[in-house]
Length: 293
Image (tube, rainbow, N blue to C red; front, side):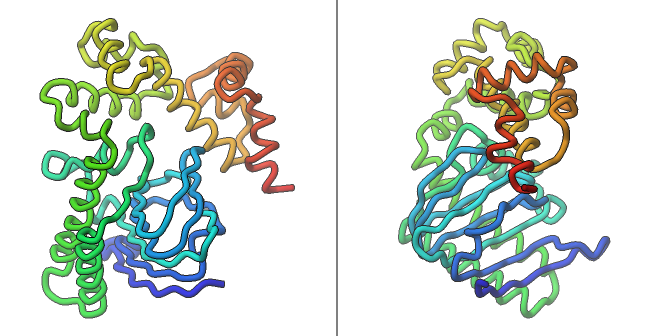
C-alpha cells in the first residue's frame, strides 16, 4: 500500500472528475500500468527508477516532471522509493488545443511520440511548481467564486514552466518551435500523422495533405528528425499496434483492420520487420495474453 492525499474537482454537468491533484509516497506510481482519459503531470520529487512510455524505457531521478497525453500508456518502476505529486486534467477542463497559439503545448509537452515525455526541474522551476501546486491545493479545499479560472491560471503556470524547460533541454523540440518556416510544416505533419495514420500509410499521402512536394517534405523530415517520413509513419502505427496488443484482447486481425490493413498477414509481416517478432509473439511475451496467464 502507498500513502496518498488527493483533491478532486467534478464536472458539474456529468459528475465525472475534471481536475485532480494527487500526492503520493512509497511508490504510488511504481506498480500499475496507467492509461486514462486525462492529460497528466507527474512530478517525482524523491526517488529514482525507470519509466516505460509508448514502449520506450527511460531512467529518471528526483525532481523529474513527466507529461502524458490522454490514453498514453506509461508504467513506473522504482529503484529508490518514489515520492511526488500528480495533476490530472480532462480536456473539458482545459483544452490544450484551444490554447495552442498561446502556450504551444501540443507537440512540445503533449502528443509528441518522438521525444522523451519528461523534463528535469531546476531550483527555480521547483519553487515555481511548489507555489502553484500549493495554490491549487488551497483553492480546491476552499472553493469560491471563479474557482475554475483560478485553477486554470495556476495550471498554466506549471505548463508554461514545463514547456520552457523542455525547449531548453531537448534541442530538437526547440529547433522545431523556433524556426520561422519549417515548424509550421512539421507540426502540421505530426498532426496529420496523428489524425490519419490508421488510414494513410504512404509518404505521398502526407505530402498531398500538406500541399508540399514529397521530395521537399522528405528533406525537411530528414533534417529535423534524422528519419525518413515513412519511418515516422511506421513508428506511429507500431506504437498503436503495441498498445492494442499490450492492453486489449482484440485479435491480430481486428487490430490490423483498425490500423488500415485488410490483409492480416501483410500486417503481421510489417510488424515483424519493425519489431523483430510477430504480433502474437509480442502479445505472448509482454501483452494481454501474458497478463491473463
